[in-house]
Structures are given as C-alpha cells and as structure tokens.
Amino acid sequence: MDEVLYYPELVRLDATWRCNLRCKHCQTGMFREPGSHYSDLSTEELEELFKQLSRLGTKQVGFLGGEPLLRHDLVSLARTLHSLGIRPSITSNGWLINDRIAYVLTQEVPVDIAVSLDGPDHSRHDNIRGKGSFERAVKALQRLVKYRGRSRTVLIGISAVIHRYCQSNVTGYLDLANELGVDYMVMAIVHPVGTAKQYWDELSIDQGQILPLTRTILKYFQSGEFSFSLRLNFLTPAMRDVLSGEGWSLGGIAPYYDRAGLYECYVQCDGRVFPSQKISEMVPEALASAAHLGLDFSDNSIRKKSMQAIWFGPSFEAYRRLVLSKVHIANYQSCQRCPFSQSSCFPTAVPFLEGAPHAQDFCAYLYNSGLGPFRSKVA
Ligand code: SF4
Image 1 (cartoon, helix red, strand yellow):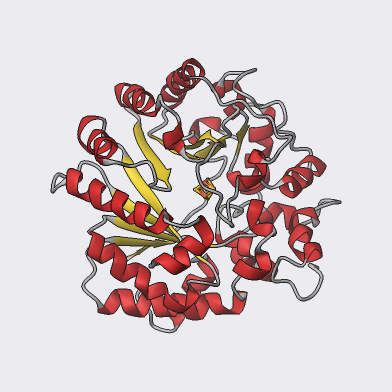
Image 2 (image 1 turned 135 degrees about the vertical axis):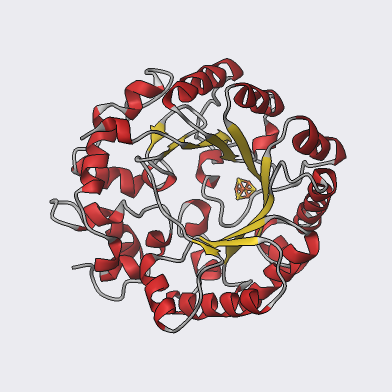
C-alpha cells in the first residue's frame, strides 16, 4: 500500500470527557461513571501532538468531548493550532459561551463552532439535556453570530440530533437555524452508544421512519429561503440512490463520506488513537471485533508513541488494507438498515460483516441487544 496517499487531514479530538451536562444520549457518558479513570492530555502533550500533526499535513483539529470549553487552555490550544497552519473547530453544548468567550472565539482566535441542539424548542431539547440548556444554547448561538458579524472568517453552526421527541418537528430545526443566522447545520440520528443505550426505548426512532423524515427535511429545505448549508450525516449512499430515483435534487445537501483511518482519525482525551469514534473505547463491541480480525489498537497512545508511528504503524495499516479491499456498503442490505452505517462505521461494518470468524460481533451487538433494527439474524 502506498502510505503517502493517506494522511490525517482531519483529527477529531476529545478535549476532555468532563462535562457540565448529563444528556440522555451522551456517547461519552460512561467515561464519567464512578470507577472510570482517565486523565486528560496536558497542554504540553497536546502542543507536542499538534506539532506532529502539522508535520503529517493535518488541516483541521475538531475539539469534541465532554465539553471542550471546560478546558481552561482551550483558547491557547486554538492559538497554537493557528500558528501551525491548522484550523481549529469546537463542538460545544453552548452553556459556557458568554459574551467574552464568543468574542474571543470569533474575533481574537477564530474557531469554527457548532452548538449542539436536541430539539427546536425548550421542551424537546431540555428533556434530553436538562433544564435551561435550550436557552443557554440559543443564547450562545446568538452571541456567536453577533460577534462573527459579516466577516464569515469563522463558521457558526448547529449540530442537531434527531430522536423520538423531535422527529415530529424536524423542520422546526431548519426554521430555528434560519432565524439564528447560522452558517451550517449538521443533522444526525441518535445511536445506541454510551448513555443512549439506557434510554434507547425512549429515544430511538423507527428505522423505517428515516427515509420519510429525510423527504420531509428535503421538501422543506428546498422550498424555503434558507441561507445556511445543510449536511445530513445519515444520508447513506443507498438512500441517495433511492431519493435520486424519486426525482429529489440532492444538489444542496452536502454528502457524508466516512474517511476514518484514511484521511481522519480520532484521539481520545487520554491520548489513545483510533480510526474513528465508532472503533474506539466508546464502542467496546467494535474493538472486540477488530481484535478478532487482528486489529489491535490498544498500544496506540500518543503517550507511548509518536503520531507518525501510530498513523503508519501496523494497526492503522492493517485497518486501511481491510477497508480498501472491500466493496461499497450499498451492496450490504444489513448495513443499509443499520443505524451505525449512517455514520462513521462506514467503512467499518463492511469488512466486519464479511468472512472473518467473528465478523458478526460488531453488528451482533445491535442484533443481540435488541437495540438495532435487525428483525432477523445478520447472515
Ligand atoms: S452529549 Fe455533550 S453536552 Fe451532553 S453530556 Fe455528553 S458531552 Fe456533555
């Protein structure tokens, strides 16, 4: 394999797993449970990581969490990234974004910021994220848009999750985004990962509803005067084919490609590196399947090795070989129905579904736990 072709253009980095909220669908909630011991990378460790990423050609580092703004060095870390020619971005719950922070992040140390919303109104959002969180998130967006002004040097967006409570008013998200004057909106579907497993009966949406919901969103978005861009993370290649066949124009909708391990990777707050969040400690079942296939990411910590040694090391190389040797996810019916395949398990699930002795483990997680869409065993 010609390794020069692949580099970590985008690095998703959990700045911390600490958080001021306790959302029902939190993917990292289990890391805050009693008995979990993780130490955040220090400022110095992160600065060293950024230097190494710069040498590998990284263009963007996206801070996730936890709540990234709980790190007091976040602005200084963003400044370091700028000095290395790397664009910083943050996904935040918005609670801590006061006037001063909004000004600094839009005017002094420009950072692209997405604020998470779990509904277009108080009742839906606060039901998931806690009392008062909708108002704080909306105020944060108003401040960010105000201080960004017309410069558009930073992009302000909404990261929206569709779950059972908001599926009856998905178009409300679009109206709210327009009203707030954001630059973009990313929509995802709730996944049975982390804390969401405990609330799955309450939060899950019928997988059969995803296509009709998508039609509703498209119809509303394309008939209105919306000034922001829209990305639907659950729009799989198979769904695009179906919708195009029905005559829908998908021109204005940014496609989602999973580039895990090829042009992206994920760094946990404790320095361990994985191809994506869906093949990390967040989804232990995926790690178990990876281990059965001979993919061992357990030693990939930037506390032990350089990022270069990890990216070009045996586990990432084997992962790439596996991914690139397989055909498109659209050929796998079970993948098309799987909630994971709507996001960053593609191209994960493809190799995992085929051939290897324990290949079913990853998808069997959904099937056996009753969390997934499967009505019959994955063949
Ligand atoms: S979803 Fe985000 S804001 Fe909510 S608890 Fe998890 S990390 Fe915190």
